[in-house]
Length: 208
Ligand SMILES: Cc1cc2nc3c(=O)[nH]c(=O)nc-3n(C[C@H](O)[C@H](O)[C@H](O)COP(=O)(O)O)c2cc1C
Image 1 (cartoon, rainbow, N blue to C red):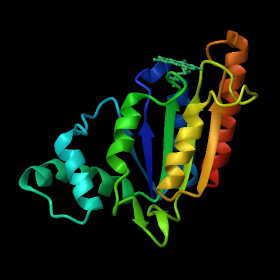
Image 2 (cartoon, helix red, strand yellow; image 1 turned 90 degrees about the vertical axis):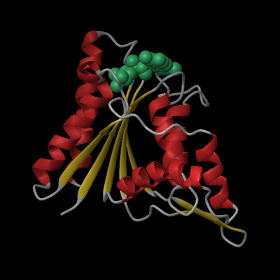
Image 3 (cartoon, rainbow, N blue to C red; image 1 turned 135 degrees about the horizontal axis):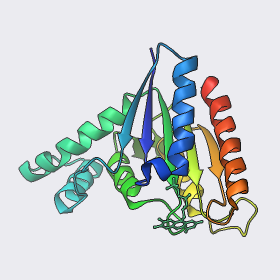
Image 4 (cartoon, rainbow, N blue to C red; image 1 turned 90 degrees about the horizontal axis):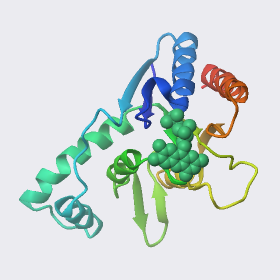
């Protein structure tokens, strides 16, 4: 019995395009994988630990092979719990809107917590950086107000960043579903864009 971890990043809930497509994905996934389970992390309903001085010192202590101080142990515990919960999943689904060409700050906060030496990546002078979350598939649903797939190049720091950071921590099997241009499309066009994204979601989910 596999576990799919779904990470939801839009605060717009029932009005959100990225969530709608992701919900279609999880519904189809459960239909086609009846013995599996889906855990959802709604980033807007969770208060994550601040990535502050003690947490950063704890991260650097790990990088330099030093022991954690009392304050660092306290700061690091919730980070470890969140990483353990992330890593225990077998498959991943992430949905997100584009915000100012990049990703919502709640998702960035979660990523800043997850990406840690010895947990999700390693470094050695011989091998350089190596991702530690390996052999697991991920699907990412992107929603954007504008159109970026047909250029101009360099403006899409949403998909580019997600692929970079997921690749950095070890993912090699990443599928994407892009719904755009949600703010420029007519209501009729919008309907078609969402339908097409949902179709892709069903196809990927069934074989995931
Ligand atoms: C704070 C904020 C910033 C945004 N910035 C961009 C942007 O840089 N480029 C873009 O194409 N759309 C931008 N949008 C539009 C959203 O990406 C678009 O409405 C998308 O459908 C939202 O996804 P959701 O419906 O899942 O929340 C922005 C929306 C918000 C609320």
